[in-house]
Structures are given as C-alpha cells and as structure tokens.
Length: 311
Image (cartoon, rainbow, N blue to C red; front, side, top):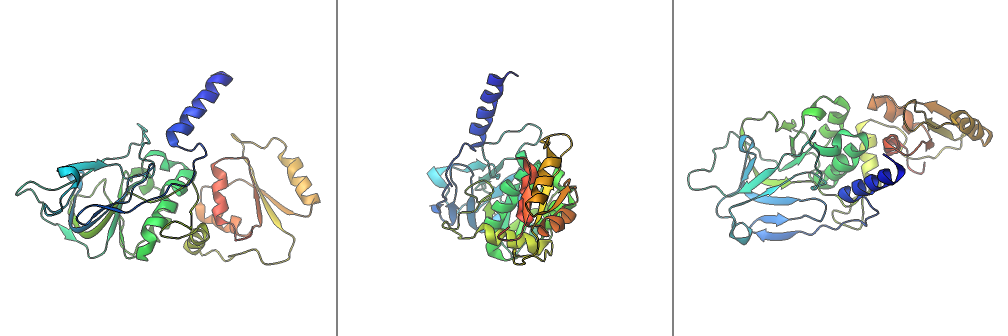
C-alpha cells in the first residue's frame, strides 16, 4: 500500500469501528414489551428480559412466554451480543441469537433451572486482541454484571479462543460464583427468570460515572487489583519513582530505547526496561509495583490498568 491507500484504509477501519473521536454513548431503558426492556445504543444491543426464559443453545434461540407480546407484533428478532454490534470478522464471527415467543407446543422443557440472573454475551470478533479483551469484554461486563455482586451466571458464546486462556478466565471467574456456561458446547435448555443479553458500555477503555449504573474506572481498576491481589492501591510513598519502559523487539520498537532510559535515570527515575510477558499475573505484579509506564502506542499500554492510583 502507498501512503494514500494506507490512510484511506485506516480511516475506513476507524469509521467501521466507530472509534473516530466519538463522544460517550448513552443507554436508555425502554420497555418495548411486557417485561422486555431495550437498553441499547448506537454501538451495542442490550436487552433485559424478565419472566420464564429458556435458552435453547442448539437453536441459538432465547424463548420468552407468549404472554410477553413482542414489539410490532413480531414473533422474533435477532441480536448480536457483542459490544460492537457492527463488527464483522470472518475468522472470529459473533454468533447471532434469536429472541422469540414459541409456537403452540414448541416451548422447550427446562433441562436446568437457575435461581440467579444471567448475562449472555460473545467473546468473538476483536476480543482476541489484548486491548479489546478489556475494552470490549471486561469493562462492559463490569458495567453489566457488577450489580449482581457475583450472584450471576455468565453465558458465553464464541468462547473457543478464550477457553484456552487461563489469565482471561481468571478475571471472568471473579464476576460470578457459578461455573461459566460455554455456549459452544452446552446441550441443555437453560432456564432463568432474569436475563440480560449483550453488554453495556459507553466509550472505549473508559467508564462515564455520570451515566447509570454510575460506576467508574477507579472502581474497575480496584476490581482488577482485587482479582490479582495487588497490594498497591495508590502511589503514596516518597521513594525514588520507578518507571517501566516497555521494550518491544519486532513491532512498535522504541528505536532510541537506551537513550530514553538513560535520560529518565538522569531525571531521577528508577528505570525498569522489560518486555511484557504472556503471564498476566506476573505482568500485573510488575506494573503495580511501578509509578510510571512508558511505551509506544499499542495494546501494551492496556497494562496501565494494573498501575496504582495517582501513577
């Protein structure tokens, strides 16, 4: 690609992902049918359903009672339960789910009934990327599920890649006291009285505390510190400040890394030059022990989530 083609491609990607400097998106909660609430915005679809709800995984269908009149007299509608509902990636597609009332005699029998509410969402699309795992999954899940204080069942589709990642599952398990339900392999009809389909969020890697449920990034980072038992909540000591300079060998390489490190030392920093390992527990412990983090723009900066407050 020449420069003009590269710029055009970048702009198309930004527009398709809606990352071009947009303002935080607001969510409303509109009762579109009896006990069915549309909590969506322009970026993501979110529905909250109350009643006799049956999740038939083999049909990719969420059945609601016929007594819950669906909007516009329809018998069903579909939803892509991912933070970026317009995301289209062939390699990691987001599975569509249908919400519908059953025809006479088609209401499936419950195989398992849960007394706790549930949240159904996808870990497909861009969430294979480290940055998107946080901005598309963990932060939206915090906004959506934190209200239940662990008394919630997580129903996850497109879970194949995440199933292999112990460090992602460690965070997921801290949202719930129940086993995670992998909808890629689940065969039972699962029944609930309260279900949220999709995840709430209003901006990339950020939380607007002025919007319901009035959580904040401070609360989210404290949640993450609790997950990894990180000891430093805030920068309070008067020692020589420690700086992490994230080193890269292949892409996003800081060409004058040595000069930057030496200058930082001359300015009074205790400098640590280190590559970020794949072991997220080790990364979290290292970053939390530091006061400043420096890196070339990229997914590696996601690790700032482990820094103490006021870093």
